[in-house]
Length: 214
Length: 228
Image (cartoon, rainbow over all chains, first blue to last red; front, side):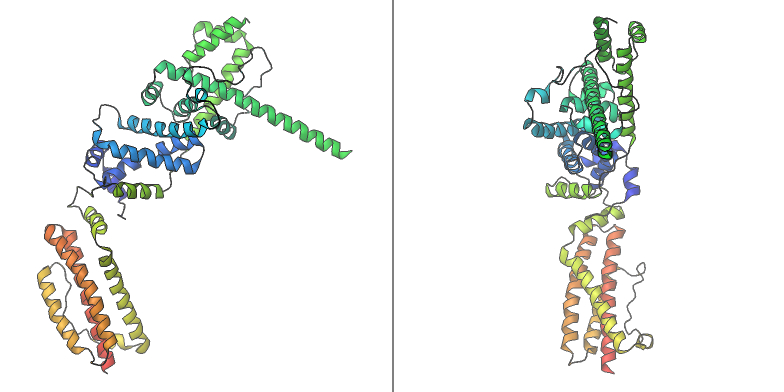
């Protein structure tokens, strides 16, 4: 195995690294990998919620990238191209996983509302502010349909702009915004459900402990 | 507040999920507790998501190793194009050198270590007393590879002449390990022929010669000890 020379690798610019990787240069491949691996891995991890799968798909995304790097002509940003590949491999995996459990419509729905309970305007709401934490948010994100999950993770977690998401996901900017809103609405519902479940459990625990004391 | 206005508020959120709110929507929210709640919940989700995204995640280092192996197996990696650099040559060399050559280098060093260990076990203080009988110099800048090779071949004869006739184990071990080191030298010589201007290639060749020299010197010292 070749030794890594971090200093030299860091010095190589992205454009030069792409050019050299197109010629099969090992250092250039490593440079490109190290430039983008954190963001791609984070994306995979946050969309899948599973370390082993995130590693697997990070590798798959880079592999696909490097297999096609000879065709890259620089018309689009390299990172956008890479992240589109990454999102696609993740979506493919999610679709495979979700198909077994849910309908295709729910997995791929582009515009329709998810089937969950819609916000009942005027009904009893649980205020999330102050009670939503990262653990619950992660749990809720895992339950989002893949399309919503992708847009939410890309925008709210990874910090992409809607125009970037539109390019990555091959949709319109309006569609990206709409999907984001719906994702947040679904998350709100899920988080409210979690909060209700927690409140119920606490009540039962309190009841149990007060009953036990008599 | 009327459900129509609340539905309109939600539609505005869908169109501009990150704001800013229109004047009408802002005015509606001011007077509608449900829509205020909706807005504040969206803000809470955004805030926690942003915090989540701010946490750095580092992929494990073995991911690159696995990826590189895969790229190599598919023939996508073809070494470094900066062949004149020392590091790239090193990488290419390690990638291209036959396993036996690397093993040879390791084995010869092990042999030397074993010889020295046996020698020191028998004669703890002898090391300082025995002069180096070989006239080998590994002052790399002064010697060219061919000269060093010839010098070593001359020393080789001297070493074999000095070996005790009865010690077939030492003789055969030396021959075997010399064969391995010679193979390593052959690989390095080929690299120098292919890349004559590469200082790293020359360094490796000198290194291989040096190994041979040390092996011969150790063998001579060992035979001197046994001949006493």
